[in-house]
Length: 119
Image 1: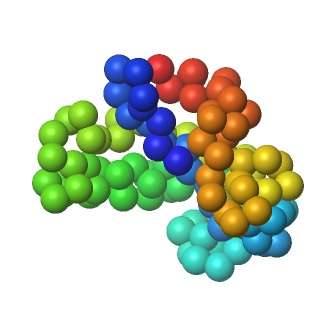
Image 2: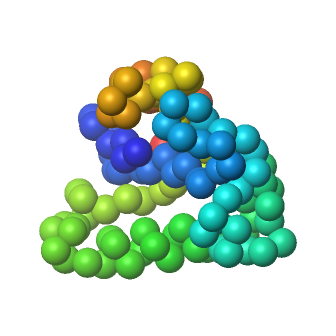
């Protein structure tokens, strides 16, 4: 989720693929699928939160996207910082509607403390 309305710059909240994450439920702390390939030593979201390999992996993706002039026409479009969330968004936790649309105001309120640390 990108955050930046009425702020100095844009930031992103990043969720990782977790076992049991369906959209309806947030899943467990265990990574699943392609997320296990980023750093084979890291098996959980809790470990990925502070893992330098994960931080670098996400930063490289953001840098590549920020450098793409078709996506980011100028600095106002670029994501300057990011944070990995400790769980996925879901209906159960209130961030998704029943049709899996993100409730941005709800998610922004739930993750307010993490968002504020990036500014």
